[in-house]
Image (cartoon, rainbow, N blue to C red; front, side, top):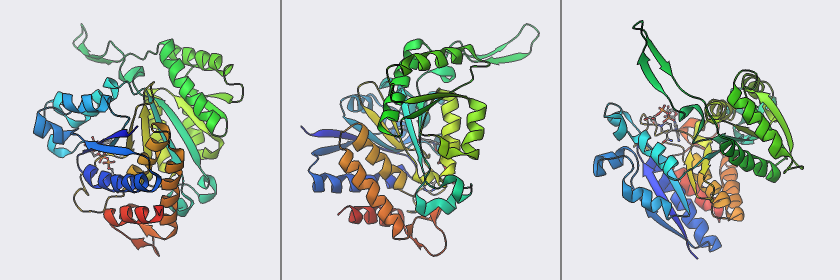
Length: 358
Ligand code: NAD
C-alpha cells in the first residue's frame, strides 16, 4: 500500500530546503520502489496569510491521515507583531499537540568531514553520535496554573507549574529504552532530583522501567552536571532522555558540538508511529530567497522519516551515505564552507545528494 507523505514547506528558507529533500525522496522512491506519494499543505505564516490562521483545519486533517510529515520551518519578522494566536509558531505548537507528538528525537552526530567546524577540539568530538530523547508535550512548558498576576502589595509575580504524570514519564521512557536497545545500549536519564519533586518521580519511574530492558545500562545525571559533561566529554553519552525544558536546552548545546545547525535533523513521534520530521533550525529569514541555505538537515530529516515512520531503514541509510559521499567530495554550502572546499548553492547540494544516491 502506498505511503502518504505530507509536506509542509512553511516560511523563509522552508520552501527552498524542502524542495531539495523532496527531490531526494522522489529519487530514492524510484530507485527502491518504496511507493511513496506526496501532497503539500500550508503551515505557519504562509497559512495565516492565505487561510487566516497558522494551522488551517485542512492541514491538520491531512496530517492526521498521513503516514509521515516533512516540514521546512515556520516564522519570520513579517508575523512577529501580529496577535499571538495567529503567529506561525503557534501553528507548529498546535500541530504537535493535535497529533500528540510527545517524543522528540534529536541526534547530534558529527560528520568527520566537518570536525573542524565544532567549537570543541577535534579529539573531544570526533566520532560523536548522541541521541537526545526529549519529552515534548508536557512539563513546565504546558503545566497549569501559569501566568503573571499582581500581588496584594502591587508587585507583579510570574509563575509556571512543572508537573509530569507517571504515564507521561513511562511513555517517553519506553521510547528512550527502545532507542538505546537499537544503539549502544546506554541510557542516561537527566533530571534535577536533588531539588525538584517532579523529577524525583521521573527518576523513580525510569528506574522501574529499567527492569523491562535488562540489556540497557541506565544511569542518572543531574541536569547541571549533564550540561557540563556535554562540553567536557560528550562521547560518554549514547542516548539521553529528559523532560521538555531540560531537553530543549541540552539538545541545542549538543547541536553546537557538531558545528553547524544546518546539518541537524529531528523527529517528533506519537504513540502510533506518526511523526513530524524537520530540521532543528528555524526559517533563517536573513538568507531566505538567496539559494544559499543548507538543505542537508532537511534531507537527513527525510532519512529519519524513512527509518522511524515508514519502516524503510535501507532507504534511510542510502540517503545518509549519499550525504557523507557529497561531503567527502568537498561540496559545502556557505554555512559549513572552509578553505579548499567547493561552495555550492542549496539546489546544487540537493542535486549532488540525488546524484550520489544512484
Ligand atoms: P534560525 O535557525 O532561523 O537562524 C539562526 C542562524 O542560523 C541564522 O543566521 C541563519 O541564517 C542560520 N541558519 C539557519 N538554518 C540554516 C541553514 N539551513 N543553512 C544556513 N544557515 C542557516 O533561528 P532564528 O533566526 O532565531 O529564527 C528565525 C525564525 O525562525 C523565527 O521566526 C523563529 O521563531 C523561527 N523558528 C522556527 C523553528 C521551526 O520552524 N521549528 C525553529 C526555530 C526558530
